[in-house]
Image (tube, rainbow, N blue to C red; front, side, top):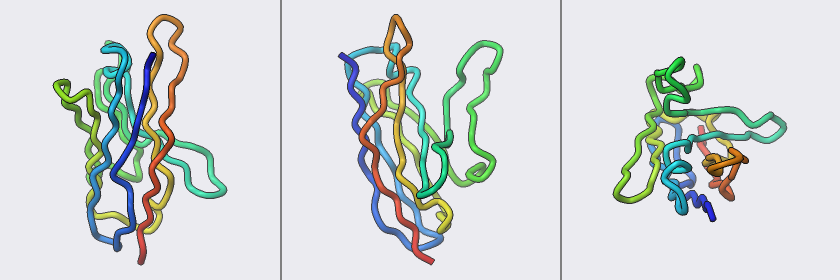
Length: 120
């Protein structure tokens, strides 16, 4: 059974940094598929950062609004995917989710989310 657990959110002042962690257990396939999303109040959930999704799309994908400030990385020994967030802005305030796919049918598996609040 694939499980996804995020941590690391909190309250930070504008210009500060946070590192989010996502532990993906149950499948190497699912660990390799994990990425970060966020949802702000009143807005749709959006992709924040993803590793390359296919040979035809080999680059790490970042939302335009976070390019140059956020970095996704992973540690296979710890089954953990990270999101390093620097120079945070109030508009980064959202619930951040880690999402992956279940092996076989590729069903989405979401974590419970972690709240990030950036004060101005």
